[in-house]
Length: 369
View (cartoon, rainbow, N blue to C red):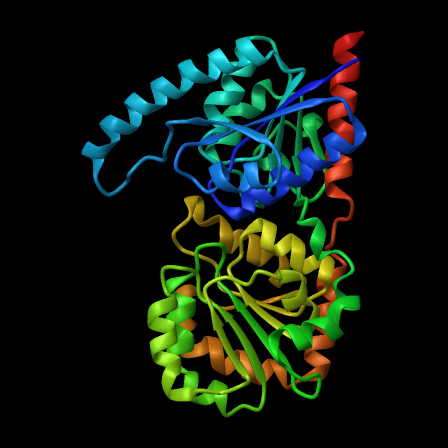
């Protein structure tokens, strides 16, 4: 029998990569299935999903503007339009199940699916549940989570701990180290610091690096600095005075598998998807949670590791003074790096996409009975 699946959500790489991983597993397991993505118009998924080989429909939905309340008139109008379009998509496509991975589009789409009696599965990536998923939880068949104690937010009998799916190209990265050193023009004789601020970059992290470029370039280490496209011009201008074969400044790392393979220490925001990757790869990490996210959930994500001595956390407001001094001290301490690597690996959840699709299979199986 041919199955039809809708995967909805997006907005950031942290939502899109898990969504595509789930879709790839669905395609592998149900080879004759039809998979439709539903995202938010103008957001990253409208490009990334077709590039991964899947069809996507866009809803004119966006988040509420907490600073300018007048703009929310348009947000509410677009939300109404999105709900109507989501209903039309469900009626026309008639999926066996709708899977929500978070992001603006998942709210209207999963609400519409529930209204038509289509079973829904939620994938909550963070340790602090988002408002949309909390609202959708009552009608969801299952809720796949990545952290313990999520019954604070969801009905306990619906929760399954699966972890967050990650990009498939990140598996077996250690075997790529030799290629990676050549790719970046680096040497195994020096330690490598990888600095990433999420798919769009992070202002505070970039400012912290610019302020400490002198210390970074004199430390005897190699640095891969992914700035994000909004900050690349300023970063390159600042780095001009410190030209070094050991400092690579780029807006986007095209081979993140290579970057991870040689990284002795990673500086990262605390998005759920990034943390899942770092756990699976056992990478010593300094987390700088973004303060510009709902319910400060990145701090909660980071604390879930910090309390188990599996990562170091630097608050965003303290990053300019403390981030690079802490990174330089840590990267030269092999014992501390080993302990962090050992502890973060204990938190890794493997085969997450397969475990999520196992739940999908159970739901659509029971639906047919």
